[in-house]
Each structure stands twice: as C-alpha cells, then as structure tokens.
Amino acid sequence: MTQEPINVGLRRQLVFENAVIGVPIADIMAAFSLSELEVQQDIAFVRRKLTEYRFRRAMPPLACETAFDIALNRRPLLDTLRKLGEKYLSSDLLIPRIGVHKVSSPADLRDAGRKVQATVI
Image (tube, rainbow, N blue to C red; front, side, top):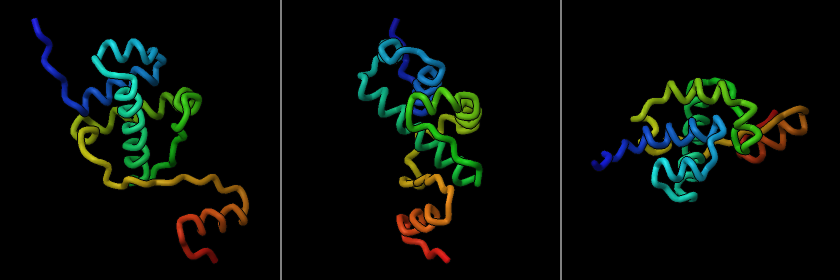
C-alpha cells in the first residue's frame, strides 16, 4: 500500500515540530523520506515564517537561530507555529529579510539604525 504524499506546509510544520522537541535529524529524514539538506531547509524556512508572522503582528521576536535558542523558546515557538496553518507554511515569505538587533545602549541604537539606513535622532 503506497502512502499519499503530504502537503508541503504540513510537512514543514511536522518537520519543525519534531526538530523542536528533540527528534534526531536522521529519524526525521527517515520518516519523511527527505535528505538532511531538505530537513535543514524546512527548519530554516519555518523559522523565517515564524519571525515574519510575529513581526507582522507586532509581537516580540523570538530567538530561534540556533538549536539552543530553539530549545530555550520551544513553547512559544510551538504556540506560534500552531497559529500559522498549512497554507501559510506553503506560501513564499512576504517579508524575506527581517533583522533583529539587540539594543542595549544609545550607541547600539545608532548602529542598528545605520545598518537599516534609518534616520536616528
């Protein structure tokens, strides 16, 4: 009996959820018949979609660039992911470049403003 291929958005969601809860990449690869590169690409794409979703709704950004960041922010990342849906995860990024800069001093604020070419008073 052959298995029907799953929707791209659903696959991305499931791959990311499994990665967040600590399932080894090799097991994810086997379960979804993907290469390691495809799994890493799905994880990176969902990270960018989560960042975009939170940015568009003026929600605070969540660090999710490293495995440590993902483990630290597991619960809010999964809560946000559940709000996205398959269709949103199947579509292209609406805002492809969103930068998050930590600002702890006025000098950091000026530096971040220069990086995005903003006017800083």
